[in-house]
Length: 339
Image (cartoon, rainbow, N blue to C red):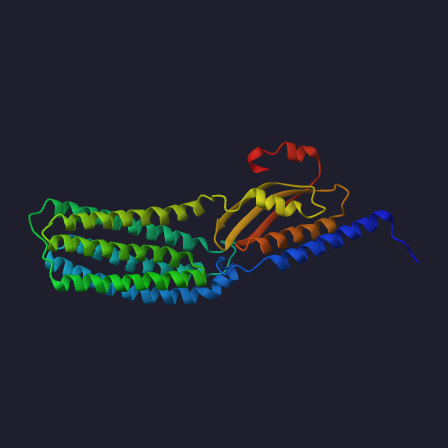
């Protein structure tokens, strides 16, 4: 019977251990229901996201019309401001619909990484629209503070605000649930935007009550509260979008390094970088292997690294690996922040 050389046996045993470890790791990794969709899943869920945006668009228009018509009829500046806020909600829905149609296009020669960042651009535009709403409310607050016209609060005023508040809460909840189920950045951003409408509606309700009991400044205070919530939403949505555009690091480099170096034949892992958005994260890294290792085996390890990262981090869609012969200088020369 032929015998394998001792080195070959050791290599076979290492291969078996690596394969078994990968199998065990994949089995232990649970599917995260909140993980963002991959490019393929994004294409399947895009029609559902667009349907949600259409529904919320018409609801936001109805709410905005009611607030503006009654707000101007009664000179309640906080209700007028809240109406403009709802209009921006509707415009955000339109932007989201256009973006979804473009973002779901498959990669092409001019856009080899796909069109997913269009969704980020749409989120930034929504953030800018919220900022415009903030400025519009500020203008209304100033006008109310310098005007002698007193708002007219009636039982119908409370009814309009309560109905609008209920609709806004329902829309925000619906978008949030759909955004989590479909893992859509647009739906989550728009849900947060719509939720500020609900908080703003509550502030308007309190302001009207203060006016009703003789505290005329209550309307202005309510409008200022609306401004605060609008400003906070604008900041959060813009910050999240900008983080993606400037390639803010997405994954913990040390976690990636440890995961890769757990593979027996990997000598070291360094220069770990990651960027992207939920469901579309790109990872770049360098790893060193035995200089005498055959190219075929090195290729197998490279595939193992990619499979392990994609299996462990649900948002990873692409992994770029540079293989180097193991020499101490490759690690010593690496800046400390990138090791």
